[in-house]
Length: 528
Image (cartoon, helix red, strand yellow):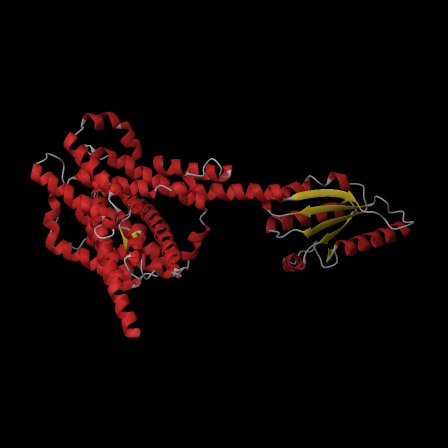
């Protein structure tokens, strides 16, 4: 029985790996061309990263290689270093090292804390970038380097219109969008479009831009270079690649977990991705990450172990060694059509369909990240989105905080009526809400004792603790005694600060005890 299960897993991994490889081939070529590094770089990256990440990564069935987001970022890296491949590969190398460092520092779980609107705006922005940039090659014009350039060059792009290229792109889009599921399960639609449209172009002798020559055989060794003048730029670019590659990979790992009901090892995944991207830097390959579509195809085709990722990489390697010359006549318009489909698929329709009814704060975050992704910078977009989300959460917590001042009733026959006041603090008590406490001072001036009732405070940060301490000290300077009611956990936290103001004598377990102590204290003062 165990042998049958093992054989079934092997067959599933073999079929899943080959299927994922077939899907990866046109995408690797297209991403390589789109990045500006050439089609061969896409294949080199898919092979190097796909093999290493499959062996060393933390998601057993994940397929890694060039992805849309990483291609967009690498294209900007190449542009930033003046198309100097040695410097660009230095950024890839540093990115891989930083991914390994993040994995060793156990930062893999942090991706779960990125708010969904940030991820949504980022992914939709990436989709729009791909569509904008690929529009030009889809009609036979040279591709722009960025979305703003694509918009500014639109008149020139339309002037360079090539009807034959546009026809090929249109037919490609029809195939990738409308191919029956029963057919695409056997032969992926992108591969059908790649082969069919290339044959059509060759047979009809169409005059359209093509990929051109792809080196046959193993890639030559590349040595990334770095100098004192460029290390700051390269380091920032490497950090950008590392952050994006890590987010991209771990999100794909979460998708794989949800399909297979397994749990990946996020820190090991980062180390595997880092090692793979480092190898890409030495072979001139396009950096990448865990590829969601290829991973899902692998799983649905039976892949469940590391062998599937290895088979995917070896399949592409075999094609590179024997069939690379066949790709020289692939029209760029066909690759553009395939990539436009990728861009359309990346758009986050889950949130886009619900924008009208979604919370305004989340829509604001998503829209901000989307605009910054498309028109400014990808990492700036993610950073700004996270900061904006944090700011909105802080604002929400501040609104939940409440402060109320009321007089405590004195005992029967007591002369203390109105001499003890309670400042009731409810909700989160932290740096955002602590400043509101100062505004509650005036109503208690002239009394003899004040009770700070923090029994409904779920947590208290250092800023709030210091604000409370300063309030107690200020009241003491006016001969007003203070008592503080806090839950046991916060009492322990306050005592650990070893404050000379918030002492065990004034920290009370409940309001009744605090009021009793306040009345007794002030009664003694009145007797004197």
